[in-house]
Length: 84
View 1 (cartoon, rainbow, N blue to C red):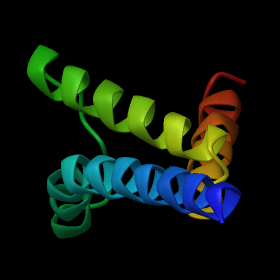
View 2: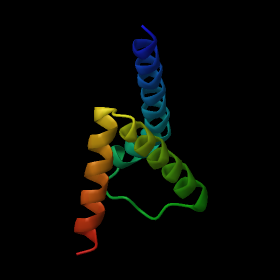
View 3: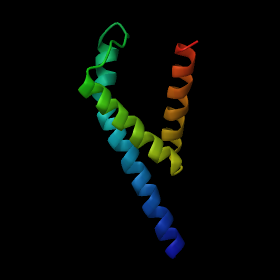
């Protein structure tokens, strides 16, 4: 029972981290979808917000959150392709 409670607590923490990252990211996604799909340079404040979203998603991914694992994998893949 104790192991189940610990696992459930970790799952809830990972889920909250994922949700918090998504909440930060939603306004950026909305702007991109409403524009021509391009992503212009971010202000310092916006970059800090996105860095925080990525930090939250990476933390959730490390705790086994599947959607966060996909997002972090996809973002690494996109960055790698953009630098080629």
